[in-house]
Length: 427
Image: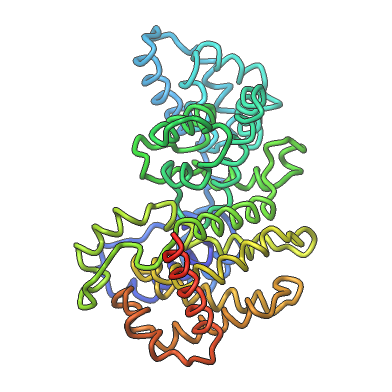
């Protein structure tokens, strides 16, 4: 579970309903010792094992290494004597009983010359001691290669930052959509964007990042401990690859808002039948055709990026505020339409509430018109939730016609519609 709150709820559900299952069904939970989970586990007498203090873990880690090395020997046609047993034992000691360390070490050794890479690790026990050490070693090597070219260095840092802060699963396709205006893609056809992301941003991070063969499958950090390191500048030793959470959230908020302002439009899927539900297969085929995964990510994520990026010290970014204002005035109902089409009407209401709570602080949203507009939106979704959730076209056919004319939402919609008609007439 990426969110500890979900993990806590999951544990509570297991506790509540475990007795409903047959006696031969058991639940095995593994977790890091995080305070919310420990509190959730306290009320009941769970049979627990502290794996950090378990005996003979080194033997299991050694077996894990031997299994990984047998695959490397086969792939690189190395002799049965590679690596030397002393080398294996040294790596076992360096792992400190952490299988994630062993996994990362095997991945790192397998991605270059195995003989060279294993010696690099063995020569650097102080650098690669524990998870932080090996993560820093790999990140430093990858960054050293990336910084030879400023565009490559920048895309490297942007991709790393995006993977750390993204609130939802993110694929190569989504990354390519969000970062499409990056200089590294200049003069390149869109069909090459995913390949360039693999080669220029992710190729040297495969020990730490899962990069799937499919461009639509999620790209993600191999382990939460990698994220823990990246967001802690002290643990990164002031390295340039450390991820500033607020800065990356602000950057992504701005990108999401600008991309939505550019790509959203009324009746984006060219629907005409009000009787068809969003869930109808023919509607969903049109959604796949007209609403890219990247645009869907923007619609779902912009608010969480905006709010997470507005820390008290560093926000004050007029550019993002301007993006919020333009998006709210021009694309608000078009955004709601897409949220309806992708089955996220409930989330759109949650975003409206979240935004309104955040905007109540004047330093966050100094423009009262935007706050009034979003207050209208929240009440609009609440009032017409059922028809909006059933079919996106009902926003325009069923909800807007009975929306009070004195609301800013209704007035703004009429103004936008008039401007669009004038533009069509003039062109």
